[in-house]
Structure formats: C-alpha cells, structure tokens
Image (cartoon, rainbow over all chains, first blue to last red):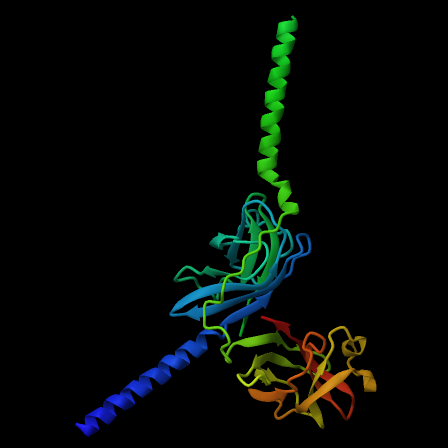
Length: 141
Length: 165
C-alpha cells in the first residue's frame, strides 16, 4: 500500500512538472517581428504564441492610424510595402479579424490549419481602400 | 416656375446631403482625430520568467554574424541575455557589449575606442546558445544594441538592436 502511495505521488509530481513546463512554454513566442509603415505611421511588435495547441497572434506596443474597415491579416509573402494593394497584386491572405483598436495590446486567433511557413507577414490592412497601413515580417523566435 | 425652382432646390439639398453622408461613411474623417485604445491581457500567465522582455536579430558588420538576442527578467529581478541560433566568426578578445543604436560609431565597422558601450562579458563561444547576466540597473531603452565587439582591433563583428515585447 505504501509503495502504491509513493507511485501515485511520483506520478502526480511528474504530471505537475510537465504541466508547469507546458505553461512556461506558452509565454515564449514561436514567431515575432516588428511593424513598419510610414504612410499611416504604424509601430509595435507582433508575436505568435502557441496556446493549448492553437496559434494566437498578439500585438504589443502597438499604434497605427485609425481608419475605416481596418483588418488584421496574414499574407503569403516575405514582407509588404507601405500602402501595398494585395487585391491588385493577388496576394493570398488569411483574415484574422477587424482591428480591435488602433492603439494598445490585442490578441487574434489564427485559424487552425494555417501554414505559418507560407504566411510570413502580418499586415494591418484597410479593406475599404485596399491599402496596407503597416506590415511585419515574421521571424522564428 | 417658382414652385419648380423650389422643388429643384429641395432636390439639390437632398442629393448633396446623401452625398455628404456617403462620403463621410466611406472615409470616416473623424477617425483621424479619434483613437480607439484597447488593452487585452496576454493569452498566458503574466510575470512568467520564461517570457522574453526584449528581442532582436543579429546583423553582420565586419564578420558574418547571425542569430537572436533576447532579454529575460528573472523572478529575482535580475536580467538574463540569451543568444540563440547564434553564429559569428571566432577571434581574439571578443566581447558581448551593449551599445546605443543611435551611436554613429556603431555604424562604422571599426569604431576605434569611440564606441559608447557597457561590457557584458567575454564571448563564450562563436557558435551556439549562451546566456549572460546583465547589470540589473541597465537602461535597455538607451543601451539597446547587443554588440559582438573585438576589443583587440576595436571592430564590430555584428550587432542586434533589441526592442521590447
């Protein structure tokens, strides 16, 4: 009985250690990059975190200009130019959602199955005028 | 005739009103002046010592240098500098120092003794992951560039400007 108890205790300990390390891993991004953009003065950091198997994009120290119908998107390119029009240039993109605010920290879920080896740039994109406010090429952390 | 003109005037007024509203809705010019601030919490536990606080990638100067420099704040308040995927050339008396990105001496490959820098430690290896302790009172907003510096020849091997998370 005593041995069984020890076994159970060891198993619990091992479990809690692995759970702790899993939590610790969450706060380390898998990808990160800094935003650039002059026309609409866009600055800050983009980072992608793996949280419980899902990828989450987080903007920090973020600032851009306010505008109509601005979205956060991932594009299948290594970088994007200021004011780039992805509709015209036929760049493949993945919608992450309307921009929640033009200033401050914010999180966006990345759809499951998104191939991050292909979508290498985060863009702040005005859907109404098809213009890039800012973009951040992603780099492995 | 007068009645027709009056009707016409009303028509013009209605049309221009609709036009103004449409243009306003399209461009939303008030957004130029109104900011929308959000402040969402991180999707993980805050104050986790595994959470990097600054990071940047190395750019080569006089020698091929690549990899990432990241700063972590430990639970006791001390700062750790970690180099990952790191590679530079081997050399004599090579040090890890902190310099200022605004320092014109940093842009030169051999800045001589003019480089304004804070010593971190001698470089432990020219390849591989390594960790250094930073002075806990260092101002990383000023000394924001991790620099691989050859003291003997006053040469910058490469540097990484680090920016906050």
